[in-house]
Length: 101
Image (spheres, rainbow, N blue to C red):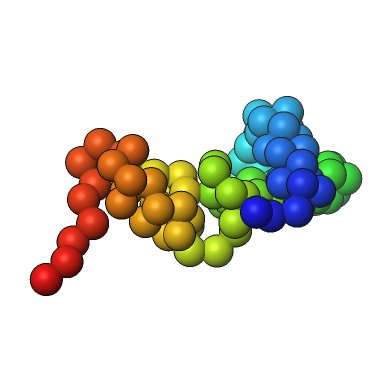
């Protein structure tokens, strides 16, 4: 099980990303628009830099929904390889069967 503080920090980041998603996208579009004057694009870059760092989507870490483990994460199942194997072996995930030969 991961530390509760790490899981909570990631959840705070997810909330911040959702809060600033529209504003960040608008400023990025404005900053990358070559048709605008340079000073307007510069101001958009400065405003973008003033937004909180944790509001960027790249700061979110994929974590297992069961254990909070950050490594060995399967996006399709939203869990780590270890939790996937345990629940798959127990028959709690539909369509997953532990193979043996």
